[in-house]
Length: 366
Image (tube, rainbow, N blue to C red):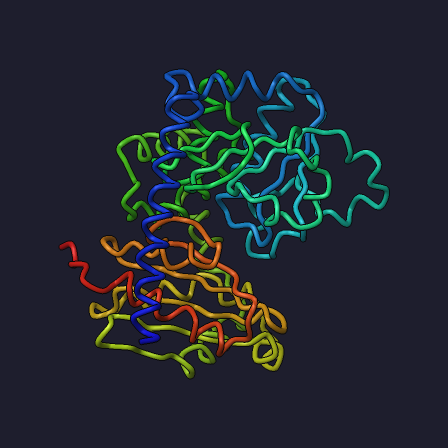
């Protein structure tokens, strides 16, 4: 009976989410926010109406967020605007090569935050103010000073958004904006934008990789970027603690073979015990998909008491968004996540039935 109730709840949740997305898409088409022929120019015009900015991205930023942030910074500073590029925490050692001039500052750099108020806050690579940490306090309660540039599907209640879900990365969107503005992209910015495109496209493997994606990458390479150097920094500069953390994850791997699911689980205290950090396990969930029988891989990390982060990756034909949407999560159909306010084991118990529903009955695409 409990299983039946779970299935019924999941079914109706999918129906409701489907209608929400349909209505939002319909509204966007009517408003022209996404479908306008001149959407990149509209974005530029909307930005340039303002003079003072905070540009930011989600906590624990990835190359896409960093590349998009730096690209928008370049656009606005080229227009003579007062721009502060801020993130919640310092860039990790592995990603500092993307910002060699240290344009991006973490929030602690601003001891006196008086200068941070009364600015337009631009979120890139996220549409959720609650994902930018302390910077969210500079967003007005009515979100009138908020502007979003993103490629994730979304459900939000504010109007100055520029969402391009057909694009594989926010960095790709920002390149188009810079191109529309007629700006030359110095190698300093081009490298970060290129890295964002490479990583969010899975090395040009994911479904949203298009001929245009490759064209943009080619144009960026003309600035003098060395792709082997970018690859070396992105993939071959991991600390030893990442290898030790990987060993810990595989020690606790669980496989539900009849469902095509596999998952890792780990607690903060486990990482602390081996001298590792959460950044050391970033992306390792993708390794679960290397097994042909696995349709979706999940990484459960208990970040704090009663706070468990869920990261999900799946093969092309398996849409996992309904599972994370049940817990107010989001992302893409094959790469998404959520945060569940439960301890690790309870979060796993709650989430797995939704994940199983997503992979059940779907066929592999060869």
